[in-house]
Amino acid sequence: MEKQNDSERVLPLSNVGDGSIGPPAKGRPMKAPFRQPIDIPKPPEIPTNMGSRRPLWFLKTFTALRSPTNPYGLHHLWNQEDPAASVAWIRSEIVKGYNHGARKFFINRPMGTDGLSYVCAASWLTIEERKRNLMAAEFRELSAGSLGEPIEIVPFIGSWMRSADNINGWMPGDDDKGHLLGENTVDSQVTLNGWMSCGIKTLGIDHSAPLEKKAHFMEMHRSLARFGMGLIGEAFPRGTDNQSLDEDAIRAMPWLATESFINHSSRKWITSYDPMTTRLFIWVESSSTTVEKAREYLDRGFSLIVSEPAIFRMADDFEAARF
Image 1 (tube, rainbow, N blue to C red):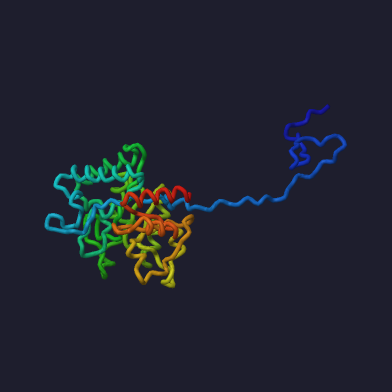
Image 2 (image 1 turned 180 degrees about the vertical axis):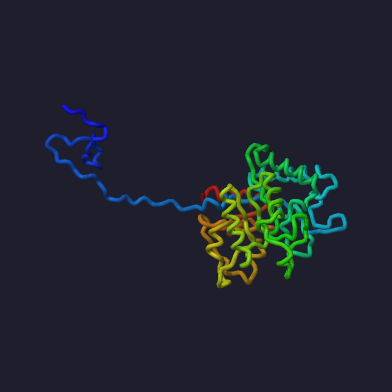
């Protein structure tokens, strides 16, 4: 008898669907395989480059209170004469948030601002050298898990710079005097590489939602996502009708806005959004915001940036239950 090749051996199926597999029983006709499609609901499609929805813990390194010894409005404990003391302070603030459950930290304008222009993107060389070196070493350790679990630090900086070492930001009429962060210049590379040396994976970008800027930062976010990095834009980008959010933009990258921005009487068109496909953060700055009010934001599909422990814990539990 000729030996049958393995490739020719076919195990016929019978009675598919009734639990039997193999040759049909003697005298029983072989049934065709059951081919009726099964309706399996697809899980919601969650963008892979949008980051976590967990709330961010807000670190107040900037107060806008300026003086001859503090010209850029830094928090006085982030502006100490001894850089090591300033870095020890910011670490202690991160530990406070960590102990409340935070694993992602939003650091507002760590370089400060001049108070006369928009927030500058020049945010690395504009921090004193010894301070930024100590900060980089500390942030690397924290990001790697020196507190027990890895954390993520998100510096909030500007969208435009004159040069990497100039803290003066954009003013109307300055478009030809500088460039956007991320444009192919040495100044952009120095700034981005500086923050990357700290273990930073996400940057918040002030004033990145205007029509003439948002396409650039959406593309920059897509490019960074290839390397596990990204951006959070500011403020919420408007659609062409000026009475709704730009649907393409809010599905392309995360955005943030302050409470005062979304609650302004002229912005009642900011309503509710799909939490599965967007990451829209509300920056809760006011100490008068209640847990109940913060819960309303969450119910509308927003996430939070906050430093009040009760609100943070409520938001963190809410997001864990939602996802």
